Length: 232
Ligand SMILES: [Cu+2]
Image (tube, rainbow, N blue to C red; front, side, top):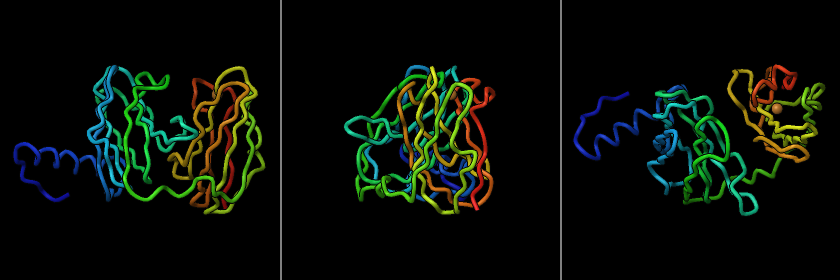
């Protein structure tokens, strides 16, 4: 990182923004960096009017509870479509969340204690709309019970395929589907689905290798809601 002269006021803000863009995510991000300051009762988003493109949300948790931060897109008038998320941000720690935002409105939610709908802030993104997520190569159905995620045991895909995952919850409690790439990083997820309901997400399986999936709620993975599939 280049050195900065710290000047009062806006210079200090720029310095913070630049540091936020080279966090744990590896390569420095191009595009915009936006600080999010989370506490147990607040979720402060430094900038709510953005330009479309690569955006890094630099999240700092100043609260006493573990938190997580979601970006939700609009779907039929409600903000329920998970565009991006970062979980398990411990008290006093920071995490970066990188997301490619298309034009439109979104809600940022901090979830102290990693539960509930979160403390929400609306953001407006100017520019071209995001690529239609509905355009996908094929669909795969996953059935959640309280002891298994079924439907992926014989699933395979080719690298680069864009799959719509559908999660039908036949259990008695909420379940979700988190999918991790061969590098262990999250490739995408279906947010928690209520019993009897169905959720979906379009996830591009970018690279070949062994992907893993699980329900990240409570001890559900340990109860059997997990598995792997191969992308060639
Ligand atoms: Cu579950």
